[in-house]
Length: 183
Ligand code: CUA
Image (cartoon, rainbow, N blue to C red):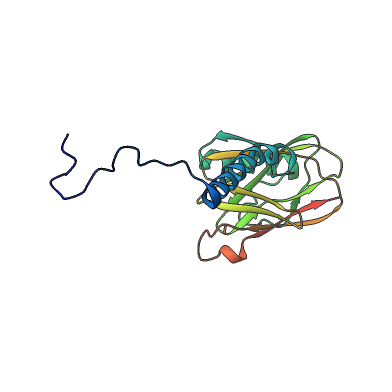
């Protein structure tokens, strides 16, 4: 076979390969060991690293989710719809399904939950993608319209927890705060 190609490039001569040795061998070894460590750490940290729960997610039309939130608020307060208000806290009876709506630019409603009780918290968006960040806990979730994100939560300590939107969602993004009260 002709070893000279038309472009002038030459094929390497047979027997060109030499096993790495010395420093090159050490560096390749370190890189392989580090790859193995990271490969083990990924599943390990998923289960043991106290990561945010992945929760559950179900498809839902944004308009239907808004209706569910309104129904939830009505059952628990007797009010028709407070979507434009967002101030009066809703006190759902535990254990149960609890709803939280993200909308430009508020979280609705304010929830009042009982410490030590278990709730299934449904969160979704009426419009665009928002970020649910619960302070001072380090809890962060992406809230995507069209999906009902369900988190099973059990509040442990009484207090007022603030919800901050941590995904840029428009001109009023920085005002998008909400509240969960635990008593
Ligand atoms: Cu909602 Cu930023």
